[in-house]
Length: 111
Length: 112
Image (tube, rainbow over all chains, first blue to last red; front, side, top):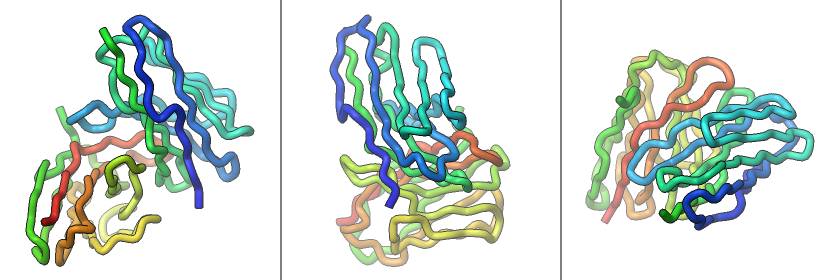
């Protein structure tokens, strides 16, 4: 059974702090790694889809890296803001684009 | 503005009732998915559709069924709801290839 693990489970930071989360996934039969942001009472929103080893993606203050050989991805948030508070999900994607999700990292940013 | 719609948002229903959770998308995506999430747990795939008249069960066993008669519509049905079906159900769709999902807002189901 394929397993995707995320750490930490939750994180509390102060406004302005930079932070990062980890996603570990099976390195065999890798096709894609997805990151989503899920705010309370909203739908999960896509941040990045990465497919190549060494991929780095950036969207504003958020960036992500991918290491498919060792099976991990990092998500970085620079200068966290209260509106960044959400659950961040990563998911391993197979050939058919069916995703296996981790349990997520809950980020709370205190003003 | 949502391109994928789920109704109802919340549902409390008695044991034994038949329920249908609706999911519709306006993007013309062939691939659609139903995921289930119990509190504190991962999203688990319960149903998958490649396109019209094509459905598969996901990795997590589910007593629910789905249909895909039209591209835009992918309803999920429970013939006889039980308390063990209490969960959040999320619908999603994606364009061809290894592309991101667009999610609906979810249905939080409680069976009493």
